[in-house]
Length: 356
Image (cartoon, rainbow, N blue to C red; front, side, top):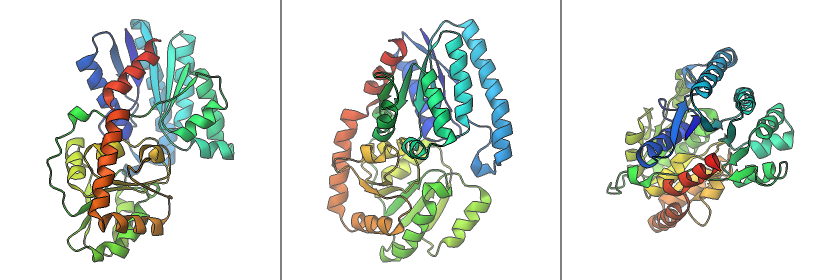
């Protein structure tokens, strides 16, 4: 049996790309019945590299034609069980509709995996993006949502059984053993862009960083040079360090050695970095977007409102001042992780969807 996984693969390293790498590796090492073929839909250039709107539309159009041709070639050569298409929304939904239409024309089962957390927002505003998303979901046989808000919206619009609520997995066996000693470090991991809440984080650390002697705020992730200069000019303390992009292994090590991970995003889907932090006993502060509130429920982290610097300051102080609270959150998160997000469990659920 063969399934085509249409999703970005690293490099660059990012949430969906790392998910792709993990699923492909697990399939190769543990599943003798099913072969996964990847069509890599990672853009050739990124917004952090100065990718313009024109390049996104024109370049994206060329890439879209390439992906359609590649799927068509594979479908002619192979007997496919299904295609599993991931999406981060926006302009990409046009590509998704064409790929799903091609698969439907060829009689191939389609799984549409929504990897962004803005669905409830675009539904309320009835945007063009929402209208396009409805078309894509209608074309799919099964649509996977990562968070409860997305599931609720889509399940109210489509027939029972079409929408599935399924979390991202984590391969605990592939993570380093938790033997690192925690350092006086707070870490951010992600694209260094405004919508990741990076400016609120800088303002928060400017306010409190001097009160915590020896502590560093480490910012890991790619940044467009002009924007990086802007936020560096915002920094009032030498304890804010920009490391640039790191590979996955080095990033995991930094998370493991940090006392807190902060992800103050305006929008997210299901950020893998949060469940990785849970596995590494690093408590998380995240915003109430996408699946973050679902993941950090049951006292597994602190959830704040996006764009709220005061909320972020109070949460950072709360954790930095209380080692017992940090330990309690880490223990709660570890227990929840094992029972809800293990790769073996989630992969079996994917496979049931693919071959059902």
